Amino acid sequence: MSTDAVMNTTIPRCDCLNFCFDDERVRAGRARPCEFGARQLAENRQTEELRWVNPTPTTMPDAGSIVLCELQVEFDRVCPGYWAGDYWCSLDGGKLPGKVTGWAAWPKGRQGTARHRTL
Image 1 (spheres, rainbow, N blue to C red):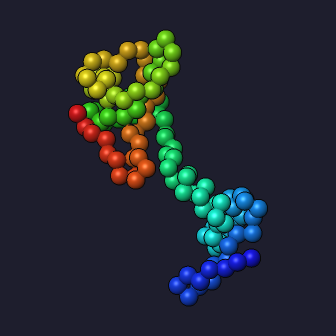
Image 2: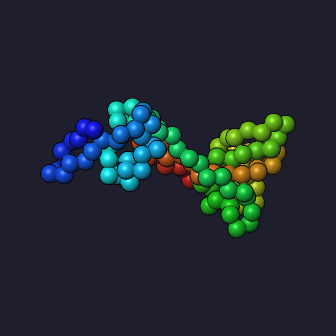
Image 3: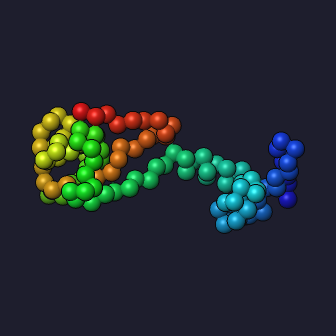
């Protein structure tokens, strides 16, 4: 097992076989991932989990905030839109076709700094 000195503290590397995520010490921060695990962690940082919300009177987004809308039309689709207070709109201001079955906050992007606009 190899070790690296970090700020006068020795942190061992994982002892996994190319799957660091089954090593409890890596998850707890007591061991460093192997090179393969480090690459996997870097790639995972490029993904973002969305939390979909069922639209009810108490769970609507702020009026005018751009969100991702899940539509039930001839086929299910996801598109940007916003809640206008009484109905859902596309970014050009027209009513969204079909029923909005869910919405999610606008993603932050890979850098974690993207912001949604408010119309």
